[in-house]
Image 1 (tube, rainbow, N blue to C red):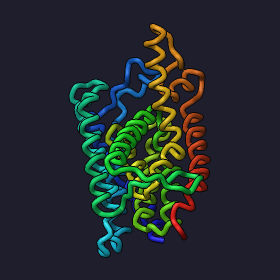
Image 2 (cartoon, helix red, strand yellow):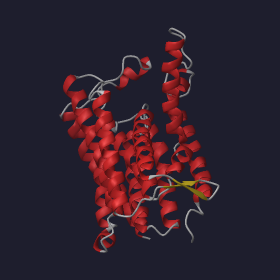
Image 3 (cartoon, helix red, strand yellow):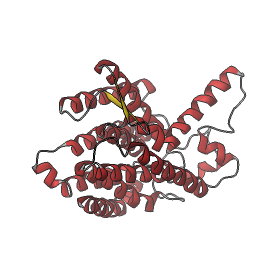
Image 4 (cartoon, rainbow, N blue to C red):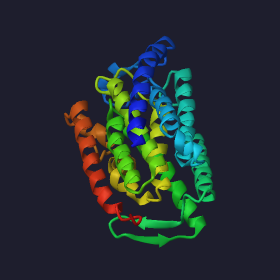
Length: 328
């Protein structure tokens, strides 16, 4: 039951770090710049401290060591590999956040720079997990309980595409107070349940730490947000979501439990394509999807509750789809 300890440690550390970090970010004038093409009422959020993701990143790291100490002593480093993989994305996000703060704008690293850095991280993680024997090129098909073997080269291309896509989808979901946090907590609990079900104590510890750190962060991030996670936090979360799926060798569960992420990024793509094809017409009131509903009168609290609730239901469905992945 070390995952319970992991949740408690992560929650406690994040809650305490938040009390220290938010005033520090204010003193450093690390305020968020709001997109001018977003909802006009979001301009009131201008200057809210960003890079708050640091609090749950530190908390998860602490929980991995404290609750996962026996795993480390047993030379089982799988949970640390996933954490470090996500941390690389967090560092990429931190660089992006620093660039935004430095130029006092909502644009940091270029799209090409972020893509290349994320692609390198995805390839490195796939190679590492393969080398350590944690990853197979056999795609498990949820609900059908069958695996589809792929050549390693094809699998690595697939893995890189899924990882980079997932990370950016989670990043796009972080558009209103608490949304990415609220959606990712059920996903973390899903991974915790799956890891415990399959006897993967190492990954149960990491998943519980993710849930605990985010639960504490929500204290500060729920509407009206006192702090934003920034790209530092959202890219880290994306790394955790896809890293855990691949570590459990169930990557095709991501579109199920992470359907909100997928729909968010698809809405953005549809909007851009439709806008270009129709010479200026819009398919949605505003993209991504949470802004469409927001422009239709939904409050940020309602969006948080609905999107998080839908994700919780999908996570329950996802568990039924993969519960026979391994013999129990």
